[in-house]
Image 1: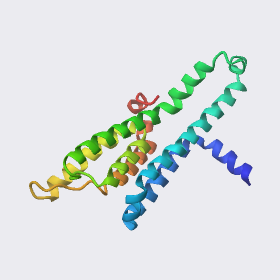
Image 2 (image 1 turned 120 degrees about the vertical axis):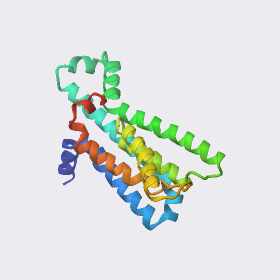
Image 3 (image 1 turned 45 degrees about the vertical axis):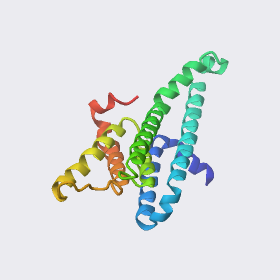
Image 4 (image 1 turned 180 degrees about the horizontal axis):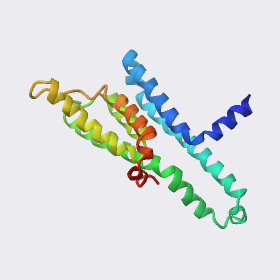
Length: 202
């Protein structure tokens, strides 16, 4: 049983971030709606746990790629250690960079949001909301994060114009997670098959 599960995971390993990201976002959204006080306490921990799990995933992918090269034409070079620098550059470019970029974007968002929020007495965001934004940015990955940020800027603005009075502000609190789910689905089922989108992928 354990072996069959492992074989299934290995065979579908490149789809794991998609399903894992959706599951985390859906679960967090459920907690946000049903247990908001719990989310206030646990939102930073959720983000850190997600980072840890993605780190383990990327380590496993790198290990599988290493064994794949060992069993192929590059076996003599990899086994001798002469091409380890090339190998690390390969796995970083093809597997790690998209999440490193989205992590950097999430951290930049955190710094900017915290700075302006503190300066304005937490007028813009709830404390846990910043972590929700970081979670969304990280899980949609690169290059989906550009689409995600654009939607988070445009969608609330359009809804504010359509439904709110002048000088009223639409809170983003319940937009971060559903928008991230939408972007992940669009990227996975639509954009990834577009020639122009593929050019942005490592």
